[in-house]
Image (cartoon, rainbow, N blue to C red; front, side, top):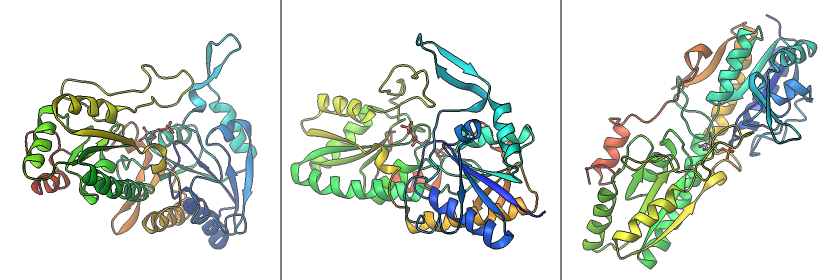
Length: 367
Ligand code: F6P
């Protein structure tokens, strides 16, 4: 089909590489199909409010290396369950999805590119079911989306976490301390595992494997007795002690907030260790530093490939789909096969076997 006018929005938490995708979609739509490109601002919020901007080759010319998203994003603002605070502090939930469809129709768009993680793509699929021709593009630093080898943003986040590990190694060794690095990853430990291996962690704790504190202590003692009185621990924010729960900075979900805030597990672990071992412990929380800044070359290339392929998919009328990396190709998968699914690290995977085989302690029995 001829593409005359297409729209793109970015939803959910940001990550490095979003602008590379926006640029690729814009350029491919204009250069290959002579289409106009509309950027919808603030994720799905822009479909409710109608706030948009025109995207051109010139507008996107310097954004390949830029972190964040020039369109803005939010991990609140689901049009199907839109929460607003009333004057008396109570929360009103409304369904603005028809309003969003109206905006889409009024913009006269042939297609909507939805760039996001699992939550955003699920909303995209709901809009597809309401008649909007959607093509999804997978992003998240967490790398926890099904049906794609990698999401863009992940490799950059791993590099940031790895650089932090390198720095903790030198100061930890100098002071004979246990250094803990807490990274993102609420359900999936991909960042912790890959950056932990890359950064020479001695212990890596991920949400998929409940850790026993005695195993962690045994590893630190083992290293101390062997003449290395320091240890570097990588922990994902969603890691859980055996029999315990997820550590949160807030008990309940803030009422208007999209996702529950995790965090603090590194400090929790530090307290457990300090009680049992005569070494100083220090915790660093890397937080949103993992999400900001310029994408690395892998994410620039992946984002560009996904964006360009998404435009071709739209031109072929292949809607209700998501573009995905199936190395070495980019392929199309169905959005309906992704709904509600999170790809976690398999506890029997080669990656974990590899870590344990070289002596990294994963919080379970093996040393
Ligand atoms: O989904 C990506 C992610 O980075 C999670 O790992 C993290 O828990 C969450 O976003 C934090 O999001 P925010 O603080 O932006 O709400």
